[in-house]
Length: 432
Figure (cartoon, rainbow, N blue to C red):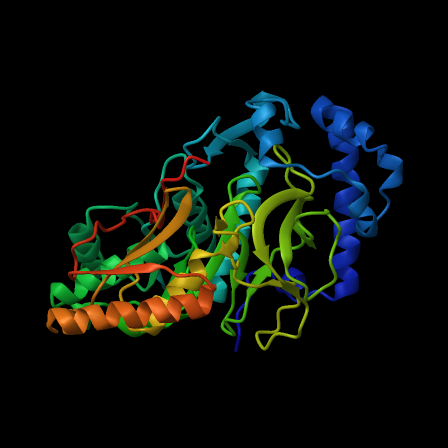
């Protein structure tokens, strides 16, 4: 039987959810209009006042908010409560421009704990579990969010953070960790190291909750096989709250959005037009219950699809597909749109490591694309000629997937730098 943290919300009827959303949206819009001059101006520029927003159906009347707005309003101009009511900040891990700083009241932290707790329970977590948190702590939201959610469920929580891999594994063995929470690339590294240390039979993991970077279905299958777990996706972004905006259930066909707190929309990224359910476009979120830093119609730049198809887990919360890429991080190479997830699908489908890098350059006014990836030990034992043939095979598969040619360089096993946080998959050397 499927467990729920808050069944009255997670299994609410569509009519009840729409009622909750409408009430919370109306209150949030009025509060922002009255208390946040930056928001008031955005709304006035679009010719909207709080009286125009009477239900969730009116959401599309509101202006969009973008990362540029967050930078312009840095640090305090989007704050919707007095600073004395805030108890925490978190910040993005980005390195360009001004960092995005998000504020939390105590009630916001409790809301966040609930969202992350729902994800842990959906992955089979109970107060009998030992949750091993290897997301980074500090300003990054990963560690803090899952830590709070684990406490909310009542699990024994190991706040390991990232790095010091052998110590991580020692604690995993000694304390009997049952749920691993980290980036998928670090989970891959942990799996390799566990195997190298000969400790696979001493690991008691049953589930993994992996997020903070894109990962493919093929990588899920590898992690499940290597660690003997069921691997669940989790989605979030600092600007909205952090991890726990949406989470995967046992069906593993998309992530349920915590839509009592965050209303999702899919828009055409070029025109801003709201698209119907099932169409692919840019994901937009509105925060309707946060106090300190509620963003309305925030453009995430993530490309995905929403679906209300009935789920076998019993939850009625709308599902978002695993993001298929980002409208801003999408690579345009020789006029072709290329997403890293497409490349990962080819590599893992060929039986290669998930440790890879995509290198883009511009030579003699023409874009070049190179994919460097580690071989597994069996491939590495082949002859030089066999390795060259494999590179040619992969080049053909990538061209079939992407529509453009890519150079492939196969590297020796474990020769590429391992990521202990977010993996750096793309190196774009072009001056564009």
